[in-house]
Amino acid sequence: MCELLGMSANTPTDICFSFAGLMRRGGRTGPHRDGWGIAFYEGNGSRVFHDPLASAESEIARLISEYSIKSRIVISHIRQANRGRVCLENTHPFTRELWGRSWTFAHNGQLRGIKQYPLRHYRPIGTTDSEYAFCLMLDRIRRRFPQAPRSSRQLRQYIGKLATELGKLGIFNFLLSDSRDLFAYCSTSLCWITRRAPFGPARLIDEDMTVDFKEETTPNDIVTVIATRPLTNNEDWNIMQPGELTVFRQGLPVAV
Amino acid sequence: MCELLGMSANTPTDICFSFAGLMRRGGRTGPHRDGWGIAFYEGNGSRVFHDPLASAESEIARLISEYSIKSRIVISHIRQANRGRVCLENTHPFTRELWGRSWTFAHNGQLRGIKQYPLRHYRPIGTTDSEYAFCLMLDRIRRRFPQAPRSSRQLRQYIGKLATELGKLGIFNFLLSDSRDLFAYCSTSLCWITRRAPFGPARLIDEDMTVDFKEETTPNDIVTVIATRPLTNNEDWNIMQPGELTVFRQGLPVAV
Image 1: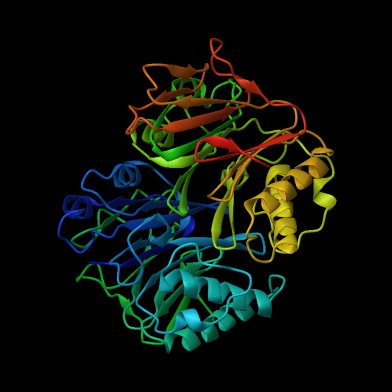
Image 2 (image 1 turned 45 degrees about the horizontal axis):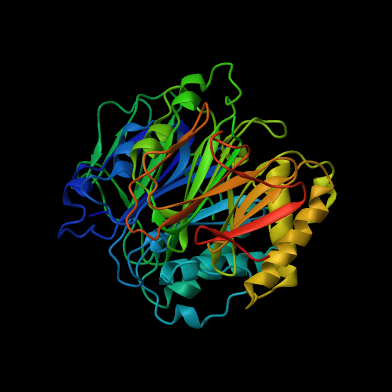
C-alpha cells in the first residue's frame, strides 16, 4: 500500500491512475477505509478531490481514473486514520494560499506534541496532526519570507530546516508544493524514479494504484514519480535517506 | 442564465443539479464557454469542483449531476469572463481559511479599482476582480476580528458594511459562506425561495440548471434556494433589493 504518491513533469502530463484495488476494498475491512485524496496543479491553480470514505462505488475514484487531467505536479495520499476522525476536513491533501500561490500538502506519519506549537496566520480546519503541521510550516515560511523570496534555493533550504525540526516529533514523510516546486521529505520511507520519453508500454504498479503514462507528446518529456515505496521491482528507484529533502522542478531533482 | 446559485438547508440535502443545457452549449458559442464551479459543504470541510472550460463532454458536470452529495450549504457560479482570462485559478467559487473555517465566495459583477486596495493576509492566486474582492473582505474581517466573534450578528453586520462599501465600486452580487452562515448580497439581482417538506415533485428550472429536491428525509426539512433570478414563475420568490444582505442558516433567513 502506497500512502504518498507524487509526480513532477516538465510538460502537462496525463498520468492515469487506476484505483481498482482501492475501490474494490473501499469501505470494507481493507486498510483504505479511511479515504484518499489527490491534488492536480493546472497553471497556477490546483484541483483537489477528496474521498473521505473510499466507498466501493466511489464516483470520485471513477472520475479520476477516467478523466484526462494534464498536470505538471500531482500530490496524492491514501489515508489510514491514526489521528483525527474520518471526515472530509481530515482528508489529505490540504491546501492553503501563501504569496498568491496555491500550496498543497500530504503527510504520512504522526507528530507527537505538534499541537503545542502556537499558530498565527493559518489554522487547521480539521483535527489531524498533519494539517496542523502544514499550518505551522506555512506560518514559519510566511514569517521568514513575508514576500516570496527571489531565490528558490533560499526557500528550499528553509523548508529543509523546518522539516528537520518537525521531523524530530515523530514520523514526517511528506509531499508539499507551492505550485512551482515539489518538495519530498523522507522521514522513514520515500523513493523516486525519473522516466524520459519514450515511456513505452511500461507501467508502475502496486496492489492499489497503477500509474500509466499516456503516450508522450514530445521526445523531451521527463516525468518523476515519488512514492512511499518502489512501485516496480525491475527498475532502479532512488531510495531516499531519513532526513533527506529532495526538490523537483520540471520533472527533475534540483539543487537544495 | 443563472450566474449565482446557492442553497441553505437544515439537514444535509441532496439537491440534484442537471447541467444538461450547460453541457450541451459548453465550449460552443453560448454564454457559458467560460466555465463554472460549485462548492459543497460537508461537515466543517468543503468540496469544490471547477470546470474552467465547460466542454460539451464535461466529466465534472456529469459527476456532479450523478453523484449524491449531501450538503447543508452549496454555492455555485457560472462564469462569463469579463475580467481575467479563462483558466482554473480564475474560476469561482474561491476558497480560503479564516479562524479554522473554510470560506467560499462566488461573485457576479465587476468592481472598478478594487485592485488599488492594499492586501495584507490574503492574496489572489488568479487575476479576477472577484477573487481580489474576496481576499480584501477576508483581510478586513480578520483585522476586525482576529478571533471568531462570539456573536454571529456582529460578523453579519460587519459583512453587510463591507458589502455596502465595496458595492460602490460596481456590481457586487455575491454568495459567501464561512461554513456556518450563507451570506447573500444583492447589488443588482438576487432572489430566494424557501421550501419545506413535503417537497413533492416540484422542480426549479431554468434553461441551464434544474434543481431537483430528492425525497425529504424528515417532515421538518427546510431548504432555501438563492439565485440570480427566479427559477420558476409560479411561486413567490423573495426579490432582494439593491444593497440588501440576507443571511441564511439552517435553511432560513436569520437576523442581520
